Image (tube, rainbow, N blue to C red; front, side, top):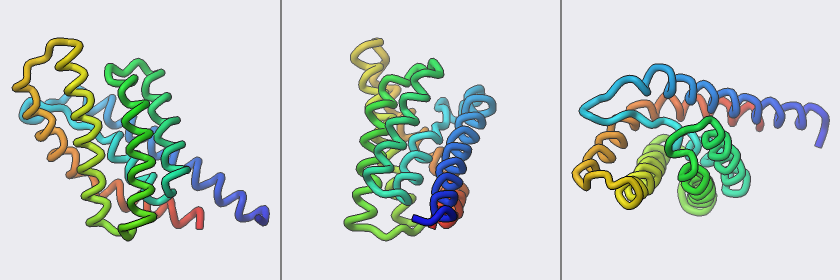
Length: 167
């Protein structure tokens, strides 16, 4: 690798980390206080899936693991589940895009929906088993997934643009 290629890879990783931090900031500062139809939006699993889609399964899984650990260290209520779910999301999204799908918007939308369903479903079942949450709160999972997908086009375009930086 030439020095310019190494610089571009570092720049790409820095921009992906900056995008993740920006989404985390928007979610925690503005969206955490708002409820839409009784559910809160969750953009972070979708961001991990979209980044892993462009990076591949090995690097995407590493990014999901690091993002999950960072999210857990921030003191989030679903942080411990995020370590597991985001690692699985990163590996699965990268593998599916490497093996089956092309890196376009419609597959990204589908992968984002599956990532959100997986993460929110695991968090819901953990709350159901450990915290005694009501089973009727499962409808909020579907509302969260549906409303969170509205941000997918913007995040997809940002991830694609950052992916072009790295080559």
